[in-house]
Length: 284
Image 1 (cartoon, rainbow, N blue to C red):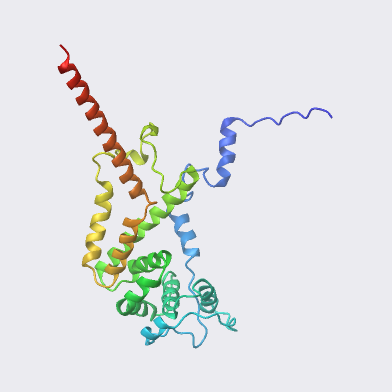
Image 2 (tube, rainbow, N blue to C red; image 1 turned 135 degrees about the vertical axis):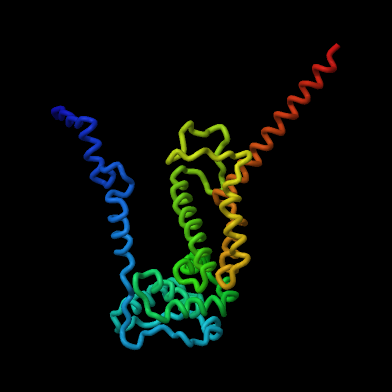
């Protein structure tokens, strides 16, 4: 079999241009900037249409719905977006309550550019009257979805501000923690203190001091403080922050573990220096 000649590699500049075909050719993470990014976002926000008779039950007995389990139903003959979404949610929330299903349907509508006029009021009524039932039953995903819905549809400025803060906090955490999994490190495994890369932070930001830095406290404390003082949305936010505080696989827990390791290292160094000084003092 004859030797096949190796294909010539394009010049470095040419290779870089072809690499940009996957979206990075402009040197931007999101080519096209704000206009392209917002257009892509809006594509995902097309409203869920409703067939006649599919309005949301604003006057529903929420306490009764909290006691009624979600059951699978035959596929609806309606081809509306709401009907299709309900079928998806029934499958996902099997074993939950009809109240959880109604909450999820409200959220699905309220994430869109347009929604039924009764959706914001029904969503707020659900959390004003039945938050205790939902806090006991919903998983973290739907609790987070609920709190960030307050960002646009809270009744008060405090509720909207709290929802926006929680949205940024949990969205950035999800991005960072998902990326970190590609490092091969388990979420509960802190990074080693002696493996820090000698590289600057992006955008020229100043570094974070592991020993004395309070950025994590400065981030979480104001959000928690506002949650403690905000009706309706506040208990939901506090519940999520308490879950965050107890979780062993977050960046906040890893930073705490790294701080403890750093303190232990410094304490060991101080003790060793003290022993060395005491030994010299005892020498004749």
